[in-house]
Image (cartoon, rainbow, N blue to C red; front, side, top):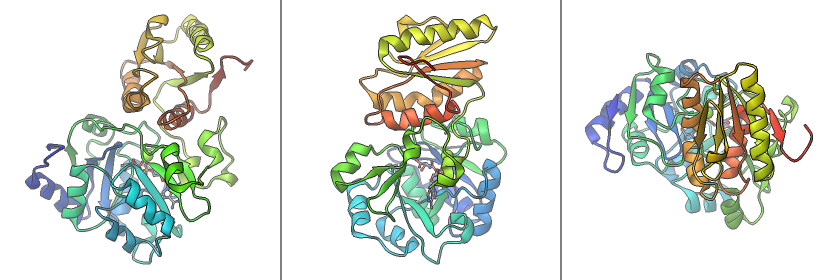
Length: 351
Ligand code: TXA
Ligand code: MG
């Protein structure tokens, strides 16, 4: 465990971590979104180790992280003008671009696809590690496959202790949900995973941009319709069963309470995940607020840690209030719906 300062990372510690990367090892490190588990993206053996440590299916390629635009260009066949515009507008930052990959990238790094996911993170520790490693770094989120992504070094250790070489600990991450994955090989570009860069801000730069139907899906997507490998795998799920209640706020509150009573009546330990506006309305074994609904950045920042806390507290069922789909709310709802296995209750409707 290497503790580093997030604003002025100690170069000695970064170099220790970089030595592991260069030797084909695995190092977890903070980004502005979540902690990533890094390996040398150009070392096929190291990347294979990455999949193994995470128990991640080999058909789901991780994101390749770079520390400048020039390095991104080496990994891809071409950078279309709109991709360049996006890099200039959003990098370093929580936007991953899907581009045609170049030949220097090993097959395993992209799971045999002819495209690659590239991003430049906005975190000094991440950028210093990539730069000192002198190679792009493949880094999925540093959790066991299927678990909520880690927003602290402790979450990383809880999942991966003994399976990786080092963790750079720079405290909790700022954004709390992963980067937005945008496919720029198609016209108009398409959001495959909503994340830290909002759809609204992409629209401002691109004019025309689409959401893949899976992003807002309320049912699991049929495997034949999947456009990103990550869409077909189980994701973000705590051990507890999650139920999401969506609709108008007052209707949601009473529907949540009905569900809490139902599950508690069956002897389950029940947690409610809600916001500051409703936290005093609920009674359950544990009630947690993600922050104010008017500040969806806070809600996003607290989401994964709260899901993990419920597990540590031995909750059997988490009843979660939905949040608005605007801004970072789109990423939050996408994660919550997936975590629930699409167990979604409409407060105004009938199901
Ligand atoms: O914020 C983040 O993006 C974090 C931090 C560590 O940077 N990383 C992260 O990586 O979330 P990962 O590997 O857990 O998620 C990458 C997502 C997956 O859903 C994967 O299926 C998708 O990107 N992806 C990767 N390569 C792709 C490709 N060539 N085409 C379409 N989707 C791709
Ligand atoms: Mg992940």
